[in-house]
Image 1 (cartoon, rainbow, N blue to C red):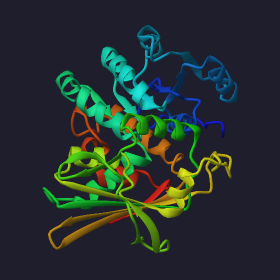
Image 2 (cartoon, rainbow, N blue to C red; image 1 turned 135 degrees about the horizontal axis):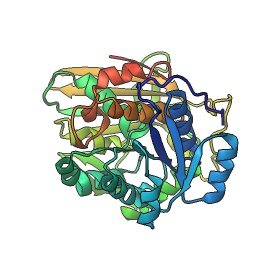
Image 3 (cartoon, rainbow, N blue to C red; image 1 turned 90 degrees about the horizontal axis):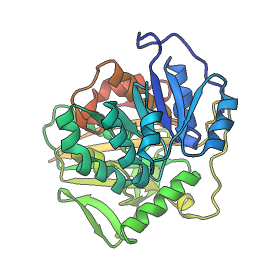
Image 4 (cartoon, rainbow, N blue to C red; image 1 turned 90 degrees about the vertical axis):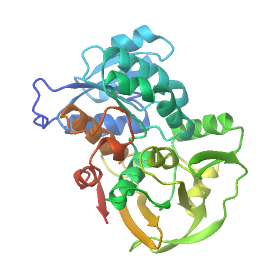
Length: 353
């Protein structure tokens, strides 16, 4: 991991706000910690594994670490003392999101997570939606590559349309070397849904048999036409219809990436530079249909895990500087100005309408 470089606090708060990163020693958590430091905020490392926290503090001199367990509310409360916000990077989120949201509500702190688990994200909206709104709290789930980036693109593409017929989200990944966390979260999700397939059609999450097929998708240049698997549902089927009036969300994944994810022997990502990024690249292509009309937005970048750092931290910066559109539980496209948010991700992400 690259040692974070601290720079002048861009949000003009002195001293730099502390942001607790729960699961800081995980693959994605490390990217979030590094990005927080590079943006002038003060990351506070948190998690249940004391040994892993100690190792990380030796890699990043001067940072504070706090041991906390989601099964022990008292430790969570102590971990959040003096913080300005919390980013939850610890999966499976089915186990961590609820206790951490409860803790942030007690502490009156904004909460952001990077959950890709469909059921965990749906739980966040269902369980905490009314309460968070009533308390004026800010809770932003799925502020990550899956669930966040696609939602921002769909929102930007939809523009001034009040409603649409369909949203199509196609993932053009050069490959997918999953982390141990990704595999663990996937196993929990499969168990929760009893092996059934999940999709979003006719305005609701639907569980049933896997009816996905192989087809092709023409991505923007230079990726071009690729073979994809249909109904490859990700967190976007939760985030997008939570605020955009659309009855059907379709998802697609390049076959190469889907095959690698399914294989037990696919290795974890291997860093190719000092930032810790892998050489895997991505294109996310979103098309919104309304009658005979369609609108498109797409984004490209490197490393689906690394890009989650800028996504989550930009959300924190905007929350702390008052650049939000509502309170309560809301996905990225509802909480923030989608196009402006996407613009801020340069150079990590290049996007276009």
